[in-house]
Image (cartoon, rainbow, N blue to C red):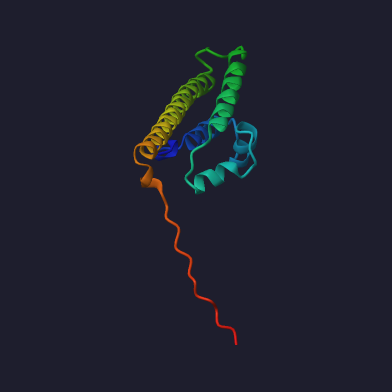
Length: 151
C-alpha cells in the first residue's frame, strides 16, 4: 500500500484554503506556482485526480510556509492584540507546518514498511528457490515436428 491509500483528506487542499483565506495567494495557479514551485495547473490536476503530493512537494510547501512565518515575525505589529489577522494567520501556518511534519513522518514510515516487505518477499522467494528448486522450474514446450505443406 502507498501513502495516498491511507490519507483521507488532502493536505494540499487544506493548505490552499489556508493560504487563500489569509490572502497569501489569490488563485490555484498562484498557489501551484509560487508556493509549491510547480506548473500553474499542478494543484487543480492533483485535486481532479485525487492524488497526494510527493515528499518533494511537501518539503517545498513546508519551506515556503516557514519562510512566510519568518516574515511575520519581522513585522512590528506581530503579536500585538490589534493585529488579530496577522496573529491568526501565523498560528494557522504553524499548524500547517506541524501537519506537514506528521505527513512527512508518515511517508517515511510507509517507505520503511515497503522496503521491509520487499526485502522479506525477496528473502522468501530466495529461500523457496533454494529449498525447492523445482518450484521455479518452467518447462519449455516440446517442439512440434510438423512440417508445413507447401504446394
